[in-house]
Image (tube, rainbow, N blue to C red; front, top):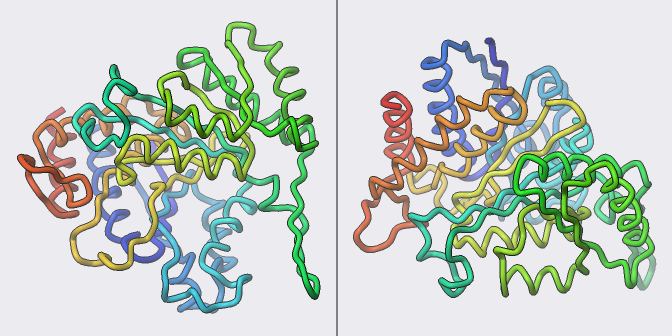
Length: 355
């Protein structure tokens, strides 16, 4: 099979971690007999510096022409003073909207090798932790009408039934492939959009009778994630709530440098990226953790390219290097082996070759 992947390295450590992820992806392709063609594109601060725009038209068009997009990270203090409409983060919103990416998947997985990094009591996560947050990505308050007045400001949260239904179906389909438990999070005691959300989720649930569904208000869900995270399997929620809860879930694992994400549209196309930021303070210093980006490649192989076996190759390689004690600085503990970005990538390549 011929793979055509658009690369958006972005800013800060983005180029460092994308380089290592592509190295691993190339090794998987070589082993499985696939050809790989990549094209590097500009977005974020790097695009502002080169073109004056956070998302050049060429980037969006080339991304549309690819099978999937692998993104590093965008933004950094260098561009904090630019006007709001030109900030690097606008590239993310532009890519999500322009590519029709309405479904964001953010797994929060606690690796047994990194269990000591979890900030919760060990008994709270005994037996492991594996949560999938399914976040609606192109509606809600982030995309609603907004403005400023002389002495105020407003942001509008709105959803249509169709927008809620399509993300709900994605979440139920994912739940069917896991433990068939789904928690829908809203604020239906206050917000009209949440009442629509809850009613629509209940309608969709009738088509998935095997899935056990419960509803939580967002404030209770945030508390429950800390109190007893193992009660969750699939969490379905709207854009802003999902932004916050997925960050909380990731920190429960104690290893933000380990967690990937996928943004999907109705077909198999997707954009894949680590959930961490651009960390410009360590850019180019061989200190960044590439594992979240490498695991994003595994998600790409599974969800967009239909290559489950190849995805498992990548995931098993990550397990192997962790078993061997290799750690970048962000996950290093006494008794493990400190290594740099390139060395971690090299170890993953070797693990894939030996699998």
